[in-house]
Length: 139
Image 1 (cartoon, helix red, strand yellow):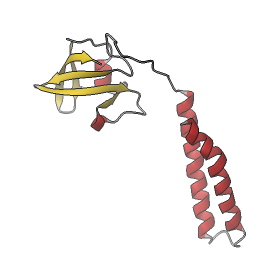
Image 2: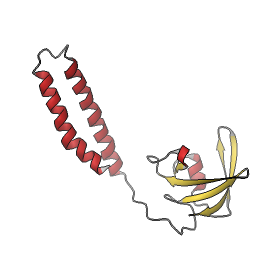
Image 3: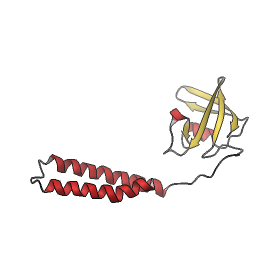
Image 4: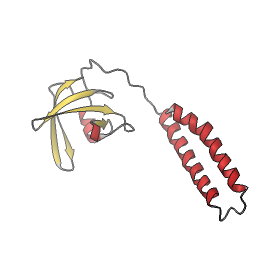
């Protein structure tokens, strides 16, 4: 994120400024498609810079959870539900990707898993009803 932020602040700002300058040299700005496009690109870049700065301001470094005895942020664990085994990782909301088994610590299921230990049975309310998991092991 730091690398992307620096690139956007230095290189992309410079490139966009050059595009705007070039477009201004072409004349009437009210009907200048290149100018409008460059200004939109500038707005998107500045929005992304603010997003990155906010994320970096709130970043929390998670220590290695190998050998953890209970589920916490950064923990990968194996569960069982209805005879099926699944592996999940508890991550921050920016990293969440349910299709890859990365669940947010702020989601209802993530909150249910927080503090659970192997052997514990947790339940949470999903739109489809109550879902129960049994914690098999923590990696």
